Length: 355
Length: 156
Image 1 (cartoon, one colour):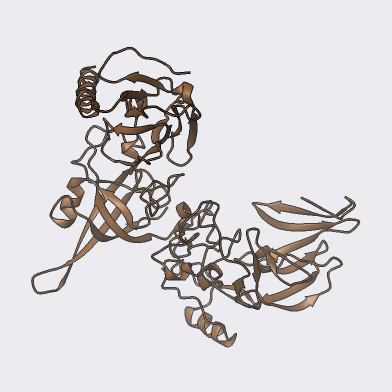
Image 2 (cartoon, each protein chain N blue to C red):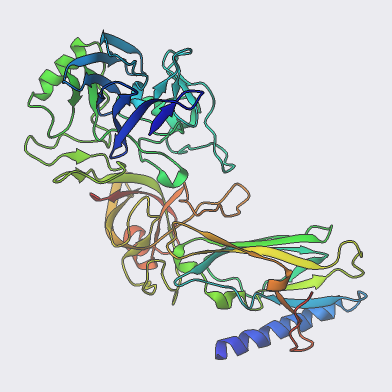
């Protein structure tokens, strides 16, 4: 991609690989290569001879702490790889400008389609703040396009963008200290000490991001990670909460083919939540006569899509998108196995296995 | 085939009943609406529709399939709208759904500057990820008198 001045003269060319900016070739100069961390932030720039000409740390919300800055051509692509305006210091994310000084967007999030709260997941209050950067979790997640994302579940169907990094990390001088199974061979305790020494708090590893399963296990990516996984890597199971309702469509042709069968342990879920053919676990907790919680768990196969969202006027939203309240529709057989009766609507947790 | 015949009989019965209630009104015209030649691609199914009627109102919806959400705005201006969409993928409809899918009443003494007309769109998909909107103009609808005759007329 070429960059030109007002007269149309090329000032620099940028080279992308796998959707990422990897090098800049200034007009009449030699190439400069970007080295990014897991958030996409340009932490190091090297010249074609391998010499480091730019080296910087970034605070969680994007403040730049340069140590070396001697590149022949100034690098303007900084926090999360987005262009930093040289006059205002704000970052251009596409849909909006971001101010690292405030740690906030300079304008409220917006949506091309009228919705009550753009790009919000109503089950995650952090996403209701239309000025918050990646739900105030910038150490774990990057923003792709300037629209808010829901890191907790990555609601692509509601327009959420790429949740960013493949793992929880703490940005240090030494790089991105992974809190994941194939993190650099330092103990978890040492990593915590390192993070504390840097005066930064690690993003919680107890969320549904990459989990530290074992020293020799596969690399676990967040369940909402978008894009192909590297060889041997797996996605973390995804846990979704919401209501389960029932659907009974005898004789209907299902969205993914086949015919509806009410006797099957089957379900409808939208593709952003579970794929066709996946077996998901549905848990329902109620109380027994003594008031003790009792959890019933069933497994169902996803063979249809839905339920779909409606606007406040109950009219369907198009294009079809997930119902924010109802996470799964169950066949009567599955509903009865879960709750003991049919024609029911209950709050459940749905666990979707590794993608 | 039997199903179609039963639905046709049912439609005529409903229309006759409606005509009985409509009989006191001058020039009450009950019409059945279809979209006979919808160009659906391979594997495409109907997941929503919207019909806007000028100088007319919705009198009946003879077939509301299970799994569909219908919305009718019978505005007293006689500029009326009916919308429908699915709740789950399995409820998506085939082309037959648009046969006699609305019964309308034309506005008696419609003003000359707002003649009776129909327009709308049908929303179809083959993969439930992307959608296609097929716009419908007056020529795409087939309107026939419900209950009175089988003659199908395509309005101008």
